[in-house]
Length: 306
Image (cartoon, rainbow, N blue to C red):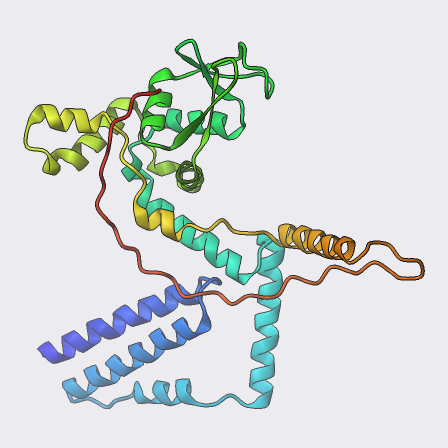
């Protein structure tokens, strides 16, 4: 009875995973086939342990049967049709759809750990525009790029916290103004919050309490816990390492056109009676298997604004 239950649970687990993969166009067919075979394998073992006819063995034979030429052609036609529909719907090829799916997975696992509110995102949005600056002890978003005077006020406290955590970098101008832009890790964190805004905390108090819960075990004294919770934790190293911005088909085409033009100009440019080269079509790429996430430790170091 115990052996039957164990094998049946394993079979059901792999069957659920196979069904999930079948509904996900970003998953490779090899992953779906593996889960289906494992589900059948454990189902056969469960039936054998229970002493009943191993009817699941017929499914194993079906999975391992080689397709006929007509079946293979039909399968390939359906695959190409699905790929065309996915490209039209997302504007991305298979590899970049996989990147987007991985990024969403990363966002769901790491945005809440940032301890941010929507206000922190607004600061980084302003920095991304290239118009966030610090002057006379205040943070503002300039009305126009390069005009570091006036503009909309931005939260001083959140700006200082993001800079201290190195999500922002400062570039000093000749007049002493400091222009704030997202650091590379700040840009990744911003992209992840856009993918999973539900991970942001509803208020500064809720964000503080979440950060306090993270640091409570690392500090024994209550005052040390409170001081650490006031700081923004760094983005987890696995998220920084695994995040890759998807590239759309339109961007790939623009890049191919630029590369073709640059190559043409490097080779001498226009020549009478010679047509300029046509850009090469971006190569199709294969979706890599999903990476396993690793959650490393976190540390926070306090910095003054300047």
